[in-house]
Image (cartoon, rainbow, N blue to C red; front, side, top):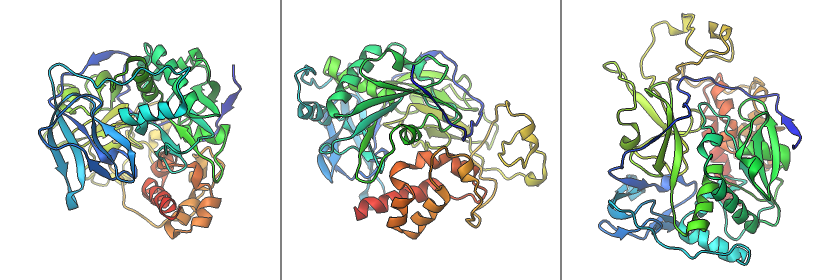
Length: 449
């Protein structure tokens, strides 16, 4: 057993709507979509037009800045629409699925004999290369780069996060094949992190270096784990991959087909029966949520989030490419008369502004309301109490706002992504959009680099 790395900082946000360990099959979706907006830094160039027939694994578009990186259809069917926004920006490509699914066939590589270049090419052609994320910057990995190591977190500590031991209980063979693929992509180690005092799918895998973490969220964030295992220095590159995405990669090399089926957690206080659902990435959300939500009072609305409540994005009708979780919470668009003066036992607060701190184990029904507007950005020392990393988030954010690249480098921008500071945004008394500020700073680093 590996040494336990205990994190003293962090915060677990106990929300209503934890998924119970049961599974249901989603209904057949009327259509599926692949959106370039799911991928950071990608400018799409279309390879299909409305009316084209595609198989699962056929390319729909590629990245303008790297034409080797393809984005492929999750299902077979007919391209029904190319939806555009302002300045003809591509929002998504939708496909009406066939009744019987057809798959593009890829060569079955013998990983014992295959070269690294052959493995990279198969991932690129299949459209699964975007599952590999590069740090620093949190962008799709560069096929030409050589990572010093690859990191996988086998657990998630975010609010209402899926239980990967349940999700991946029948995926051991796919995971092991995925590990073999990762070992072809790096000359360094493949690191797996698991939660202390819990059994994990990672324990059964061969060829990985195991690490054990204990502590509150963000202990499950791969960025926090990298910081405590092998920090990223200037000029170094590491890759990360979600553990369920690793199973999808392994499935490709075992079957020669792009099968984007995944098990997602359908969670949140507004879900009638929170549980797990097996679905194909990009599915229309109606096929997942129809009949699953609680009845709402007249005038009440809900927000559906691709991902968790801290880092997820507002769903625009389809399951996103990377989503392993759907969260449904109240919209929070109603004004509360004298809300600030009420005891508010049902509201969560880290500052003990409400009496809810008397009930630390209570599950809360929180909404999207900020409970106030943006205020002056002042040094409080609050962020450092919740970020278990040896950096100064307040000063890093101010360097991002100032566009000071030297300071951003010195203050640790290579080690963090917006998800790592999401908890800081949650506890921020100034209501600052911390994740967006950090993303803008990272994009400036990319531009200048």
